[in-house]
Image 1 (cartoon, rainbow, N blue to C red):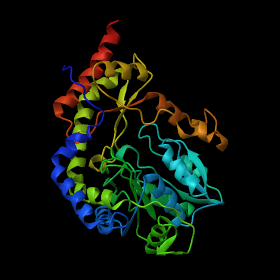
Image 2: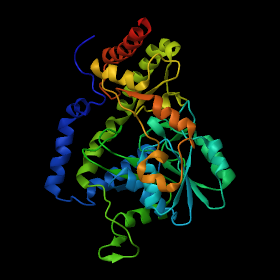
Image 3: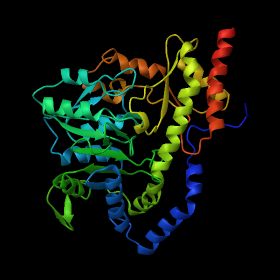
Length: 382
C-alpha cells in the first residue's frame, strides 16, 4: 500500500491530455468575441444531439435549468403532477418545482437504485402528466419498461440524464427515449465543462424552439419577447471547451467501464462480508459516472466507519446521496415523512462511492479494493 492519496475524482489527468485542444478552443472564442449564443454553441448543440441520437439540442446554464425549462417547453406546469424518484440529486426535484408542477416522489429499486416503476404505477392520477426517470450513476432506467409505462398510462417521458452521457440500454441511448431529456455538464460529469452548463435534448422541433426562447428571456428575436423566459444560456466559451472534449467521451466512458469491471471482479469475494456493488443491468451500456457499493447489515462495520478508515488510508470516497430528497429540510412542506420510502432511506445509510475517473490506474483501483478488504479484515480479527 502506498501512502499517496487516491482522489475521488482527478480532473487534471483528463485536462492535461487535451490541454492544447482546450487552449485552442478558448483562443478561438477570444478572437471571435461571440461569448453569448455564439457559433461554437450551435456547433456543440448539434454535435452532442447527434452523438446522443437526438434531433435537437438547446444549451442552457445548468442541468437544473435543463429540467425546469425543458418541462416548461413540454407545456408542463401548474396543476400537472410529475413522477420522479426520491433517490436523486435535489436538482431533479428543484427543476420540477421551478417549472411550477407538483412533484410526486417514488421509491427506488434497492439493487439498482433506479426508480421503481411498479411503485410509480400506483401513483398515477388523472393529473399525472410526466415521469422523470433518472439515469442514476450512469445507468439508464430500462427504455423498454419506460416506453411500456408511458404507453399504458399516457404520460410523457422526460429523462434526467445528467449522469448518463452516451449511456445505452435496450437499443436506446440516454436522451432519445422520451419526449425530451436534460443533461448536466458540471465539471465532474463524464462530459464536463470548466464551470456550470446543461442541455435539453429533444426530437420535437417545437419543444426545441420554445426552450431556446425560454433560455433567452422568452425571445427568438432581439427585443421581442413572446413569453416570459429567463437568462439561462450555455456560454459560448464553455460550449467550445465541451466541443473539444466530445470526441474523447466514448473512450473516457470505456475507461470507466474497464475500471468498473475490475472493481466488480476484485470486490466479489467481499460479498461474504456485506459489500455489494449497485447492480449493473445494462452491461456495457453503463457509463459509470459513479461506482457505488452498498455496505449492508451483515458487514462488521457501518458505512460511516468504513469511509473514515478509507480516508485514513488515503482513499477518497463520496456518498450519493446521504439524505433523500423527501428528508431535506427545504422540502418538508411537500408532506413526506421518514419511512415513506424505505429503500431510498436504507440506501442513504449504506452507499459509498469509490474513486472513478478516466486515468484511474489498475493498480490504484486494486489499492482501493485492498484498502476496503484490509479494513474489514482488521474488524473481523478484533
